[in-house]
Length: 515
Image (cartoon, rainbow, N blue to C red; front, side, top):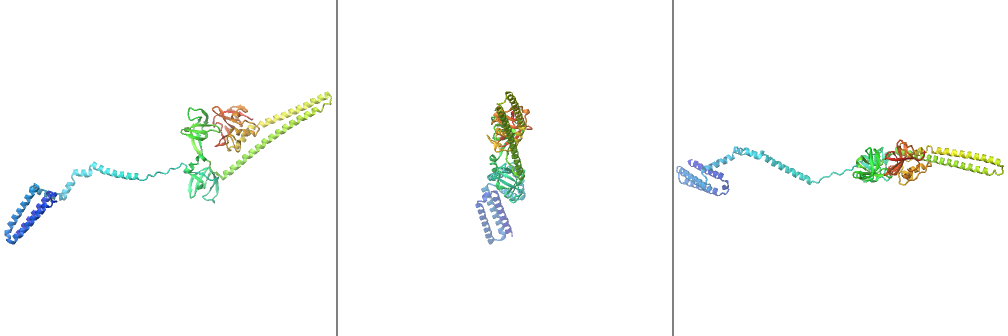
């Protein structure tokens, strides 16, 4: 029994030493050489125990075993001291430290030290480091976003909701999106409409007074419409100040051609940065500051069936008025011709009567001659009186009639060099042709017409008087006054024959060519 106890004690001691050595220097254990030696010593120890057990009694073995174990321990300790330069107490302390390190409390002690906590979890720099890493990740995300194709929004035309008719002549506007639906109006080629809605192959539009449906294939929309502006649209500049100077060149030092009032609208010929070249009338072109005008694009619009019928009716009325005026003028001409023929016949009768009385007495001849002369004189006086009466009659109201007649041609085209009231005329050709219907002959050009008739103050003008306009002191436009501060004139290629305020530009003189 004692032998077994000693053996157990010896083994515990040896294992304790082994653990101590292992804890002192882990790198040495990794070599495996010292451990092998210790195992060999243990084997020898067990062999000696077996030999003694076989040869001696239990009582004799115990001191030998104890003595051998002590010797072996001394040898191990001595080897350890020589190998590591440490005494047995340091090794024990190391063994205790190893035990402490494996205890949970020791672990908690190590992990809960304030410095460690601050370092691992609460130090600002660490947080910043982590945040930076997050930022880096965000940067990566941004880079990924940047690497993706940039989607550029498609440009939107300012005419996205505008359609311009590209039909050969016109396209019908229908009440519903169907070719079987009622026709409400017509959209002629080049006329524009505002798009309200799309219904399949149809679009709902509004143009002028007409709202209805048109097949989309007959409309240019968006950028396609923009490409047709120069062809079908007209840019107009409306004066937005009380009075605006029209200059000869694009400079405030340039000559002023004329003055135009607020609200007047003129065709834009071209835009030049801060300047706009406008067409004042048929012969006057000049520059105005873009700051003082509002520019818009004008298109023709749809016409309803009702409006078309009314237009036809008015056209017929104008044609009828022209026909009646022409008949009246012709009647007056014929009446004048009959009176002139009667005067000539009376003169011939008087001459024949005087030559047939040659055989009569001198007294009788003289009396007859006197009587004939008196009769002739009376006839001549009567004829003259009649002629004078006609002249007064024909002149009375001629100017007013001419002013009324001229308004029948509003809307007809302007043609430079033309004289046709229906097919096209310029400003001087217009007043010349109107007054020709009443037997008043005028020169062909406005500058020459400015010397016809008699001068009249601009404040005393009457219907039928001619109003003249100039640029740089040169007469270049003429209009006919119609009363109420307005004139009718062949303006320009855009507006044709139109009615304007007398002061649409600054007038320079007035002439009365008929009463």
